[in-house]
Length: 322
Image 1: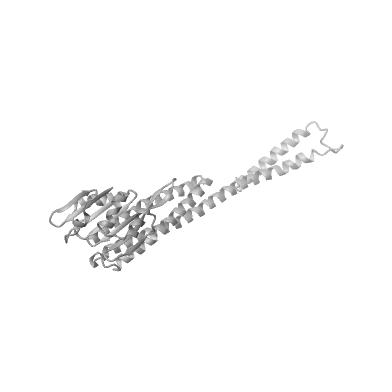
Image 2: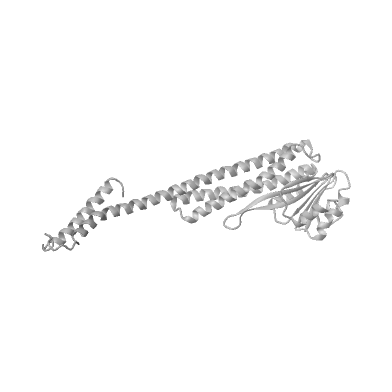
């Protein structure tokens, strides 16, 4: 599916559906074109080489997908592969979505195979506000990357919420399944840092004036997106440190619970030591034992067992071992 928004300095903006003669649209100076391709077919992908003269190998990479983040510079355009992150707790965890961007002097062409809510919002804004396209392709590219980076915030918000829940569960009932969830979230946060790193390098190059298609007046906008990615990476590092603290707390709580169980078992073992001694003593098979033929001998032993148990329990209670 292809839809486009076209800007003319005198006629404003309009939406174009499907395949048209894109070459003629950008032939006039001052015009601006944003083409958005969602899961392009072979016929739709053909216009990338026919109308825009993109290199066939690059177009083939777009069709086959699964490219790493990068920027390839050609004579008249840049080819940009950008990744964003989305998080599904309890399912596939953290995953990345890639988007392919062709950036020319008077156009931005996007090819993607997944939905991007942020792009949908920006597209609607571009239709209503002609300044977004009217300020040039580099300013539009900044807006696109800025909106894509915002997608990271939803993952960070989920991380923050889940970590708070984990901290509460650690003190309430630290089950073994909680340990698995902590490690899974830690892996997702590490994955997020691995995704953000290459994107920061891409924005750093745009903000430093490396590419001739980017005007000096837009450097500061790309630097702002770069700073945003830096904050995201710092947040990921903070969440990783928080998870280390949660993990340490988990082991501490589990250790304390184990100590409590061992203390109770030790108390009961200590109580039964004298009782075992008494019952073992009178269980010996000697013929002559003073209390064996005494009428109240059995009740005396039971009374001694009760008295010893009460005394030990009172002692342990006083020492706060129970």
